[in-house]
Length: 382
Image (cartoon, rainbow, N blue to C red):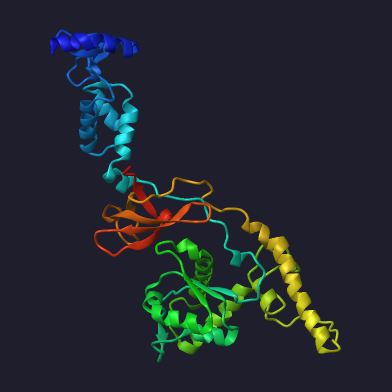
């Protein structure tokens, strides 16, 4: 052993000359540069010098980190009280990055650049061609209430059948999966479910639902209404939501602003427009008048609202794609962070640009399911 250390010492001297390595009397290579300040060490002696790529160094660093799973600085301080390790920060950072427990408690959410807007939100089309569906509640109602209502049938009786319906994977909608399938086949409606645990994929609908909830809170408060009263309140709230300005907000009461009612009613409010009136001679003139109102809406939509859709509100940069085999921590609502389940990516679903936004996960407790990559913390196993 003595011969081996004497043989290795010239290599250490050449490799770590800036630290002034010295062969101690017991044939241990130590850092000589700090010999006047050895009080920082554990045994008040010059600390041994260890290369960062040696197996003993790695094992000791892992043991020190696992004793408390502290941060990088704390782990480095503990190690340097016994040994001086070259490139120690890089080693400790790597160990902490690969630690499942640390990633589970302190890992950041995986994000991917925000996807381009769907074509349904960009192209002009008749009202109700593409609609979003979301459920909220429960609400207390007085009197008898029909237990199983079919809101979609009521909607299409008034508005007609849409081309597409978008919704999340709510438990009631999933339970009615077969009924929805039959509805799609009979009426040619495409019903698209968003990825589980990715509420932002139906974000436009959820934003409007938030407005409805807020209005209900202000109007009803703690009161309990009958079914007919609640239905009337909801209709009035729907009108208020359709009067909301989109695009540029009005700067004065006289401003002519753009709102959904412009397309639905030909005017911004349910209040009758003031005169003067010009009597139209025949149906052809009336048709051209209505068509002109529609053209004016889409012209203002293109000028005032479309430019606001170009800016990405969040998730601006591209990030590393999740891959098959990655171990992830599944972020779950109403569950403490320390109790989040581990899962393994079994399938990835890249978009047309090759960016993975949804993945299929396998866990030990539930069946395989899809989850959005922006809702997972991961530990890279590669």
